[in-house]
Length: 121
Image (tube, rainbow, N blue to C red; front, side):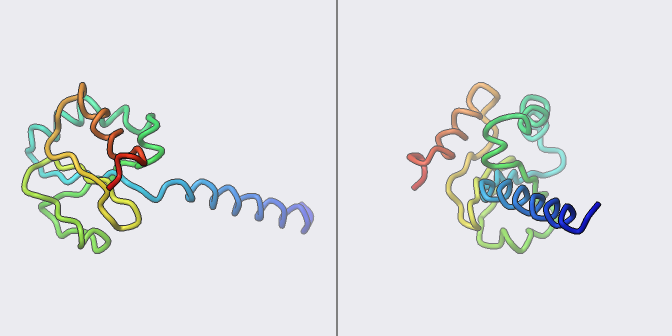
C-alpha cells in the first residue's frame, strides 16, 4: 500500500468514527441490583432486542450495578431507590427517567416520550 493510500484510509477511518460518535451523546442508564425481579423481566422482554432498535441508536443501554460505587461520570445523577430505574443522560445531564419497569407494552412508549425533542424539558 502506498503512503497516499494509507493516508486516505486513515482519514476515512477518522471521518467514519467521528460521524458515528457525533449522534450518540445520550445513553439509557439502567440502575439495577442482583436479585431484582423486575430487572430480570426487563432482561427477558427487552434487553435482547434493545440493541436492534432505533432507541438504542439514539441512547445505547448502559447498566450500572447499585451494589457497586457509581461511576464518576454519573455522580450528579440520583439513581433513586427502586430497581430498575432507567435514566436517559445526555452530555452528563438527566433528560428523563422511568422508575421501575412498566412491562414491554409500555416501556418503548415511555422511552420515546423522553427521547423525542419535544419530550425534553
